[in-house]
Amino acid sequence: MAEKTLTIIFRGLMIFRQQGSGAGSRFEIGIVPVPGPDQPPHHIHHVPRISTFKNGVLDAVKIVEGLHPTHRIWRLDVDGPTTVGVSKEQAGTTFDRTVHPFSRDYRWLFDFEDNVEGYGPLVGKLDTSKLMPVIHIPNGVFYARLKSHVQLRTKDGEPEKPFGRVAAGMGCDITLTGAGASLVVADTGVEIFPFTAEENTLYDFANTPPDTHPFSPNEEHFLHYYEMFTASVPKFHFRQSPLDPAPSPALCGEAGLGQFPNSL
Image (cartoon, rainbow, N blue to C red; front, side):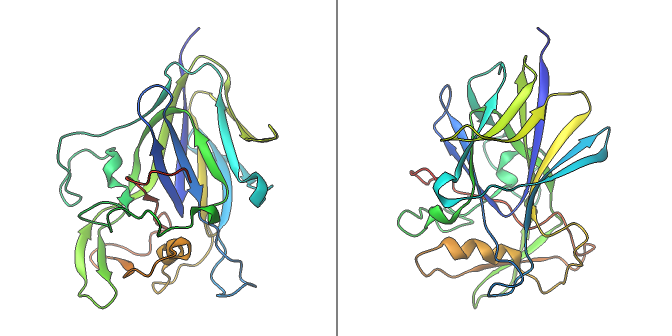
């Protein structure tokens, strides 16, 4: 049977973690819940949704529903994957987010546990049970699909410094011979969403405010990540460089846990 590619883009407040390598490996993607406007601290509500694009045009939008803490693990069942396990696209042994030439490099994703850019290991400092849902993806190649504008970053009480670009959208390409894939609740098998591998079709899984939301330069959506921290750490603050146009509706800020030993 002919091979096809299913492409899913992930945007917004979510955590990426690779479990294992080679056959049997998988990615876990945990969605960061954001309080609605009627709940303290009265932030702009994020709307988890899956949008279908055909020939570059928005074709349909599905609001992600059925969230429940006892059924928070979801799974992507792929029909006829050509490879077993997951991988990352990376080019070169070093990475510099100000000058790196490979736009699809996975390392554009900001990693909370990076020993240089982040905090290092965070075992015992995070309550990942707050992530809902957590999606298990057993097949595919993960890469940066879209980079942000140039960012400035500071820690609490420290001077602001140039940081470079970060991933504003992460892609997953799954090569398969079947019809597509189905997102299901792991312990019940109830289908959440069917993905069809069709030519010139891609899917955008977003956890951002509504696309028509008027962004304010004072909003810091990235700070929602700290609601799962159980230990006090100096918080990172990101701001788009004034040299670039603002605001960027694509940037809520995906993040990764590159050393975390436990499942999300």
